[in-house]
Image 1 (spheres, rainbow, N blue to C red):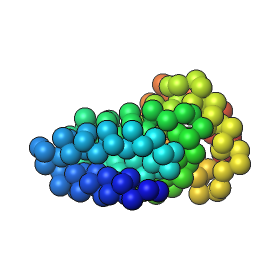
Image 2: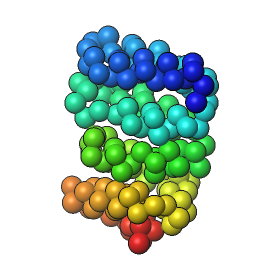
Image 3: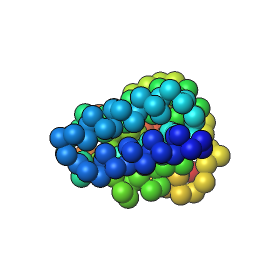
Length: 152
């Protein structure tokens, strides 16, 4: 990762940790630079920036939308890298990210393809998230079946 991107991620982290009314501005400023750099390694780092304690949902959704700007292969790869930690650190946002993936047919297909060769930690985290989503509502049941099978 280039030094400019590293510094920008540090700024993003500080904005999220400050959790103030100025945080969203700081997040959006950092995300502009991250989006311009378009480095696929950014996806995992972006997703790991999500925080269930952050008071301003628009800041977290801005982070997710920036991660979603990457092609499906890069996005899913970053998601699978981040998800074992993200499910523990920010389970609310982890489930939101997975639900958004499930709502996109192309991204869901890429997730299923990538899960087959993923490590056990990623598979287990996705399986647990699918179960959590299905326990909250059966609305996603039809969308999680194939993903659930791919975790086996």
